[in-house]
Length: 515
Image (cartoon, rainbow, N blue to C red; front, top):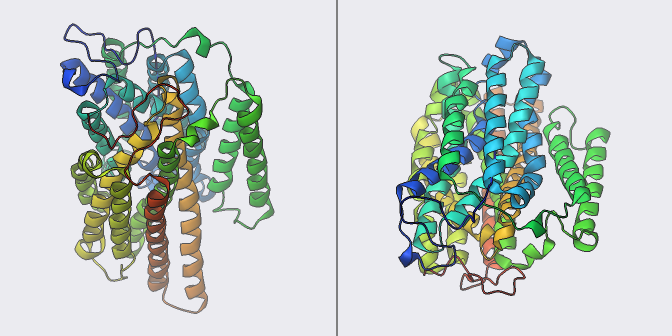
């Protein structure tokens, strides 16, 4: 889950006894990849992986957790929701704090907090305790996640070094959701669900020790720490958290209920004021809206939100299909995601190479189209289907498409962004993917449930009704990926180049331009 840190030299230079990396603007030909870079990248990938994996790792193990701690059916969802609400709500604040006080510092303390909360979750003896510690995991993760991308962007210079680092980081991050389902099945159906949390502890300890030794200390300029946008922090964090909460409780309070409508209106009003405050009032805004003048940043965040809508729902629907239609065990369900995981890892490094050759616009659009094709195959599932044609084949196509577009989308979010704003820019693309995913999951699952209930009311067989609902859900997700392709074509420039975000100095015009 998310964590973050910072310290004392510039991020673009790495303290090492080996040859030091060059600043982000220097030619990649002068850069020498050392052992220190490898360890730094390993730590950042592990942190991003843990942040993402903890969103899905408990899903398959929820029945075992319910039995072990005596959760009611209505309260069980908060094992997931407590994490999601605080993680999504505090991402922007986490990114800004890293920019202000140092990314390594925030990273390390975030990892420490996440590791301690993981221990608390593993030791939990009551439903209430686990809910609280899961929320603390999400809160810590919100400070770690933005730092991984911001630190990586500072340590590795533009060109082949950064493309390689992003390829590795993106591949590992992109498969985290699927790996979470696999681990949930293996551990939840094996040793004990508690090991879903205990496994974070040695990894967290390693990350802290390695970060202290290898991640460069960054010391923000004093001018960035003199003014903190308290109003922006409160309204931005509060509005996003309230939105996440409103979405999380739709299972028990439908979209049209007075409670949900009131929460959504309140969230919209708070976030509306947040935008006005950031644009017109704050002297040092939490999120400078001028960043969105950069077509790359704008396009990346729109694409991120749409991809999140489709992919969060896909994991959920695929899990339901395997367990409730095909009647797979938790272990077999987890293993069913292995092809998707492996192929995502294989496809991820291809994206940056294609961007260098063809530009951002066509690569992201093509990846979205291929992803839509995979989801269209998922929409053909049948009640008497099987693993090969209904799970593995769609997963192969989907993983290739999403693997190609994920890293270019992430790179675009930081393209042309000044160094002192890279933390909040990283937080934004994480937040849009996460909040988009939460909205997409809630909306698509509601559509699928409505279809299932409609068929049940007409006396159709239960299994066929459930399968038909899932088909509709996958079809909607496929449509969202088509919209993603259209958005990429509309928002990114034709040649894949973008202007710097309101900066007067010469900044890299596009990830698409290889040095």
